[in-house]
Image 1: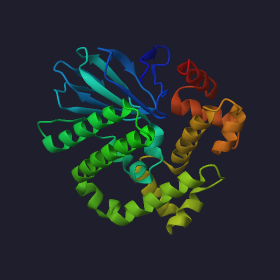
Image 2 (image 1 turned 90 degrees about the horizontal axis):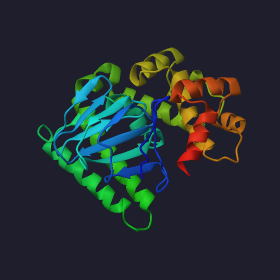
Image 3 (image 1 turned 45 degrees about the horizontal axis):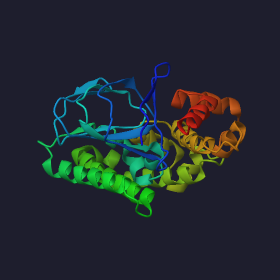
Image 4 (image 1 turned 30 degrees about the vertical axis):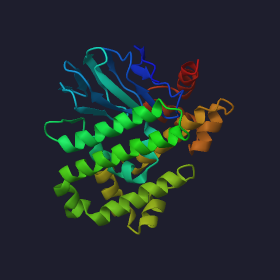
Length: 291
């Protein structure tokens, strides 16, 4: 279920993953408007009725039935208006994106996609709509392995969107700067960073794993991911810390060091810059969603 709880001071929506860890779904009693906000989850919306209007970033969308909207983690968005029961909403933790090296590598391109229309892409929207309806069917069932089945469907949707977006950017990805070889270097680097993020790793260590010089690796990594190596590593560590903070038996200091941060001062600073909350505030809000 999704808890549509708005914190006006922090511009956050509190998403409750009570039923299935990392995944939320809503169809009944969805809001007809919701103020501008952001959260660390991704959000896919299947439009069911006329009259919906959304804002994602600085762009306003007026989707029609059958269209699908995509909000990616940490994007500012708003439901300007929607009729009652006008849409189906699927939300999932950013950890699903970050735990897949393929998707994490392609996220720079996926984040460019916010609206797929039935008119322009009838085959793709039909496939995605079918997956969302299948997701709803499983989510509301009493089958075994519901969490795994739902997450498989989310990954299937991400693959479809990824293939569509990468095809749209064929010219960029196909040139020398973003060749298949470069893709493999970045994928290898992201995989290594994910596996060793809790260790004291450096950009030189990762460059060595890919077989590239530190200078060239730094250049292509920033060009491809749109962030520096330290920024990327910090984001991975923050996500790991978020998962650890859910265990209230662990102290915040334990979470910081277990996630790979070298000091609590650095941890608190980067965590707030990334999420908008302090670790303590984040843990408190997590506890509130379980009440």
